[in-house]
Length: 338
Ligand code: UT7
Image 1 (cartoon, helix red, strand yellow):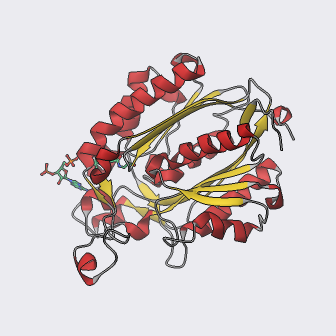
Image 2 (image 1 turned 180 degrees about the vertical axis):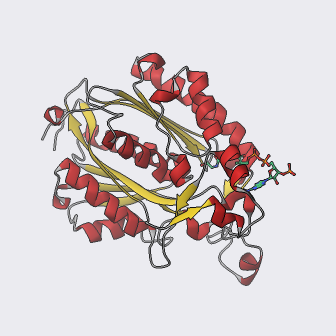
């Protein structure tokens, strides 16, 4: 391990989405909605949905294998695994431990992180801290969600929004100026009630009553989250750019949390970032919570929108309420510190 690490960068990325596509037209048959309403109000055309037997840890494992392969890192070389999720396989043990076992990452500490849709960026910041302090060298950060299993398929105001997926990053030491330039994390717990799954925890354990009241599903006050999101996305981007010491016009690629195309466009507009620099895949996947930013980042990198030397801005917001932003100067292989 490195006690004097100066930079921390992303060595490799991988993603996993289920094969099954659920289209807006199919949803028209399930609830009182229309393809036109969903596309114009959210930007979503379709989303991916797992089968009955697939859980968050399974998608996480596939994504992690892809990231390890791209980074050319063996599971046994990982020091830590962080899984950001709101849909852990079980309340405990942590999904990160299930993943550790599947990968055979015997020397890795493992824990889950709950920061709603901001979870992956929170995880990236945590990994940076562990690596810079010298207590870890190679950290796997995963965002993985199976939201379809906590979606109320009778509630049209939420069921059209969400999808399943996962993505992972291998994070390790690198030579500056490459690597994470700055992060910015925040929370406002007073907004916890606008987006939650009310039952199934220690406050309201599963009972006949909680089942009848449909409390084991996502509950959301959409308009309130929307207002918060527009403010949080803009403010977080401005603050992280200030911390990184760069201008927003120096951002080469903007990876926003994919919750609603109107939120994405309004934040890009406020920040003066042209849409050509913004990666958007909400049309294909819907909102995959903590998996949304890393799936978009993986695809942007594979499609050549993120190249070595680029300043990549990631901004997310979500249940908590939480927000998180990071600016990463994308590294090349020779920037790695082994
Ligand atoms: O990852 C973080 C989590 N979530 C978010 O970021 C979500 C943030 N919020 C949003 O994206 C938007 O608020 C929504 C997409 C959830 C809703 O869009 P909106 O423009 O805020 O719609 P609304 O809730 O104000 O509802 C407008 C109308 C209502 O009808 P009335 O009362 O005007 O007659 C709704 O009942 O649209 C109706 N509506 C629908 N109509 C057709 C709500 N959902 C649907 C639907 N299909 N699926």
